[in-house]
Length: 420
DNA sequence: TCTGGGGTCCTAGGACCC
DNA sequence: TCTGGGGTCCTAGGACCC
Image (cartoon, rainbow, N blue to C red; front, top):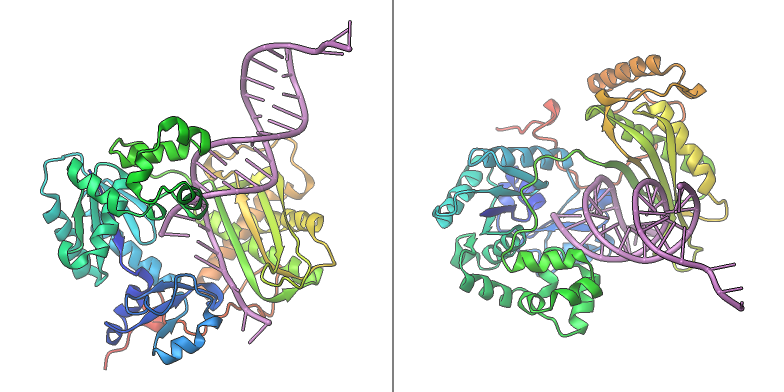
């Protein structure tokens, strides 16, 4: 059996840890730049839709007395680790699926899963105060559905639901709307609903050949998963394939110098992440876009992949190749709202294959390595990215909008909780 | 005026090979 | 007038997830 353990309203729950007075009150957490609502307490769900642009709902926040926070990823990441560590005390087979949910794998199928689920919930609550829900089922997709049921009917289920019989499986599928199936998003549910496929059960009645022809092998697999035939296995930790730094700008940017500076900074940030994970990249992708919400302005969006002559994680080289790429897609006549740099084709630094014919930019590669490691040490010690490339904004005029940021209670000595 | 960021997987089509 | 068959690899774009 798989168990899916999912934290309830995770970011909001994290904020409540250090603001217990917000228990039972409406709370929301915003995305980067304080742009959209990305987490809502149950009380806030009545007033605020998921993904709501914050600026459109300021009045509602005020009128309904809704507490608003900027995203505090240092806090959420730390709490996520604590939750995941608690899960490891139940089984070593834990797959960390996202910041707030994990799959657990139990090979023994004649356990009392209901009690096990309650035990898991209670232990996480005791260790972290984070409320969770647990869904058990023989496939991952069904465990997702079970989790949804546990959450929707939390009073009856005590936050745990087990699909362990044909009867319960059918009952769950008849209840589950097709758009709420894990793996069916907006486009596909629209197409399905147009054909009068409304529930997960309806979906499982479609013939294999039809799914294969009209959709893809992905949906065929999904059907099998919902029918109880596992197609998705327990995943050991897989090496990651890409890594990115992308941002929406606070205002529209048109100047080459400004955008070049952003791209250089994004490259630098990617390079740092690569070194942190002992990885090197074989290619970098750069993209930029205009503001798609401004219909009155000209629209343009483009990206380019720049292959690297030899894999690297040096700020200097990555910034150089990324800005070279940018130069090829930048057009003067537009105003830009977003740009990003993506590291592609990653590999472990220790497996590095050197290039016999290294280009000029790589000639002092060894020195660059030393330089980067000194830079990382200094920045770790001094904080706040004190040492940067000259191509970056040295006066640090760029700052994310984070007007409602809570403290880094768990990762900064200067921001520890004070108790009177 | 203000609208997030970071991932994965699959497919179709083009370029290439013999 | 008639112009093959069978492959691989790469990429862009689109779908999905949290």
